[in-house]
Image (tube, rainbow, N blue to C red; front, side, top):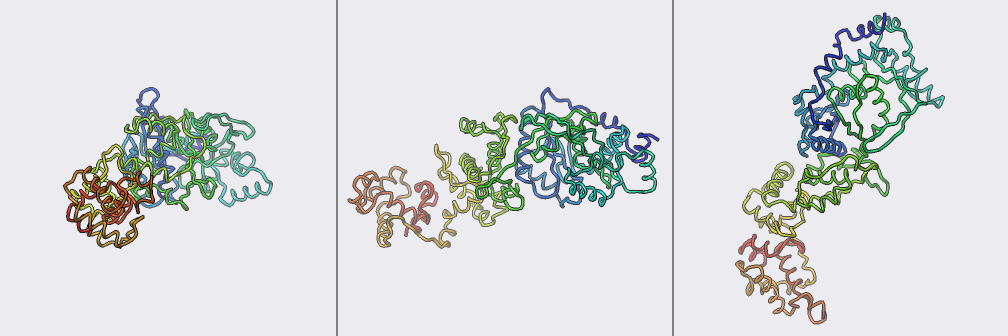
Length: 545
């Protein structure tokens, strides 16, 4: 009996690997085209770090006219959550990072290199495991979980490296006949890779982001096919990336230490290895200490958080590109109105250390993104968000014509308003413009410098009776506010007041603050003239009186 007989005994129905090599040929792409993937497990929500990887992979494939595909790595079926694939697909869709191939719903896919769900590729993995068995590069292992645990305990007691390797690999040196006998006797087994590596030898590897890295060779006989017939991650990713013709594996740097094993698997399978780019994680400042964004501790770790808060998709993508390439910020400054699609993204310019997550910077980008939108765009985005997350705002926006006028205040100017950073800000930023909300609200009026109630009444009554005309143009309106200030004994110009503050009780700015607070309940708002124009004569008079 030889290796081939043993392979046939274990996988009698597995096809020859030539079948799959023909079925999934080299892709017909131009020279230098990048083929990369996002390959998450459906075991919970999509992490912002995962979205970051997907964006980087998408940028690289788009730039080179390559292919970006979504592969779902669901071989660990104990940890899978219900509708996990739908969550992944929707997260990519929400942030406009659409795959060219791969899963498009829980059960549907597109592309010629599928199935794109690992649990549906069992036959493929078994064919390649059989191939390794035939070459004597893999073997059945009959050790129980208890026996493997016993080996680990002995290694720990002896203070040596844990694992299934060398003299500790009990089943490695079983003869073909002994292994066949155990299988025929019905003993349970898994398939292990027979590593040709030695820990005292080094491999040199060039990572696109990390640069040149040295590692000890892999000498562990890892499991490649589990007892349920499904592969482990390490084996599946090598087979899949080969057959899907992946040129670049872009993934988290927690996988960097697996590079020696992965390169070894590619080599022993006779595959050309892809290029690896290991991305540093997004970090968080926690009382002066840097740590990874945590699924458990940080709500902003989940991509769903950004949708729920209503942070614009473009702001999230701009922020992630800002983290990814140090050149992005200067490019954006020089090209404020260009599409991010025109940015020349480069893997070589990615940071070797993890970037700190900065919510303030993200929200600043959100303000800039929203400030460049038309009132119609802001209205549509805010309404779409409100329909899902804020029914009160959705009701306010039901009057589209009026809401467009409200959202159009100080929009389209050279210096547009920047008071909205996310769609969840919209309600608070415009609620005072709706009479039913304004008069129903419990407003704590703070008029700033002028706090005497009688003086406040005098200012508003004088304005409404002698100066207010809704048809005034802006210059006329502002001159009337100055006239009002002068009539009531206040400095007509702020600079006059600053030159001789002892001469006046205040200045024109203090007068306009009283009117602003009467009209809106706030000291800080966009342009008051525009607010009055949108409110209209009746509402202004009602509020001032």
